[in-house]
Length: 623
Image 1 (cartoon, rainbow, N blue to C red):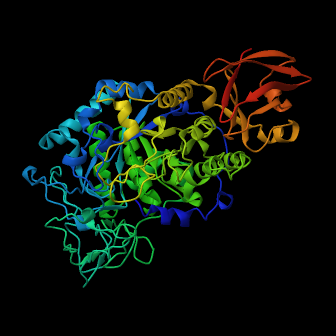
Image 2 (cartoon, helix red, strand yellow):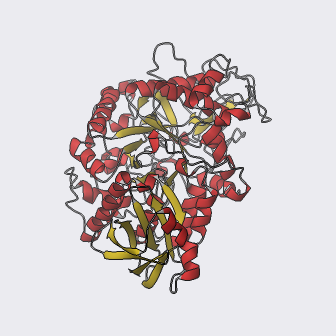
Image 3 (tube, rainbow, N blue to C red):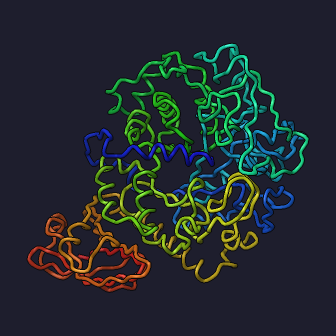
């Protein structure tokens, strides 16, 4: 959501150095045997071949992608890129502007919808999917079911969004399973709070739409019979980001309402605290803790929603703004999910480092965004004012939870690497991507079009360029050249775009097949700063290894300067690797064209290295 920027800015003031750390003990579990790669795709945009790109354009003017566009060919190409999971963003039925009343779907009011296509994080019906994505909206669930089957047949797994913190202001479950009651249907609206109310209320006040700012008008000023700066909601509800005003601010999440999980307005809780000892317990113990307790109604509603989608064939969830929901709820929800599917992939958006360990150990999340630590540090280096010296410090601070911190350089909330407000050139992302994908055992995520240098330059309507729009109907030009009129063969790509995608393909496929990347890590950056002439803070180096595979990884973040030096492997690494004084051939795992050797003399290793601007090496030691 656009106004996450302000919230994140406040959160990042908390540093990892103040966080309580769990005792670190490296354990490679069966689930950690293979590195995972998540391909986030904005489902509405993936197959759209329309290049009109009119600001605030309609479906008819700008086009829209469909579930059906993920053909066997498209999915196989994604798989061959080195992907193991697809996160289909924007699948649950959210508020949209297009008229679908002939399918028994009520119209949505533009005064409480962001953009013309609507925010995917303003879910209107959790038991159905976005009608825009279906060739036949009356069969939209069947079409999504078929997409899940095609995805599984391609050897990939499926993630969708769940947004427990808030729902659309006009939530309406038209297709609830038998016995499922809508959010708020039994709420006592005379009270600001009741433990079993699904929403918080402002008794005696009616909702008022925000005062539009910065020249904004719903639908860009286009006429619509519902665009009248009015939306009937009596009494008004709290807004999704927690605003308690009957008229939220323009920068509030005004299109959503906050879910009540039994947290009173004063912050105290109407449910049992999870004992500290449960930090060390598995999901089965968490499940047993909650199963006989009476809990707030909203807990049951979201548990039922996730169980529904697991039955539907979904393999995991990405949870939006998880830190705005109490950690005890996550313990309950995730333990129920894992009891049904122990391998379910559970990814949460959490930005406060002081909460990371709570949401992993008590909330039973598999993975959290590593935004505030690794992503922000790498971004500063890419932009030219950060030093690589900070990366080993970040990794040391995260050592006890490194496997749980998913790495990315792009997603729908962040600026595109190639956008002018980031670095303006996708090539500058290469060393950063190598580091992001190889420095830990955690999963890697890329955002569709990242592998092609997509700059997010379109003025789609709501929001600003630099991020590919999630609110409007739009085409994604670089990606469309790869789609090539749905041939999905890259036939319209430039040589530079082809080469960039080739780089991502080589790197990602290496990561999902490397044993060492699920093994040990040690930085050798500071050793080389002290002992290697010509090595400086624009270069980063570390080693990864298991008994069967030993890797030496170097990246040059400088876009102008080459480096040539006698690179050192310190004595303690040589001892751990059980190498004797000798010469060991090295293979370069990305492009395989570099012939080097590791010379060990008197217990220290040395490699003659020449690093071109933005170049990375992944050297494998051959014994």
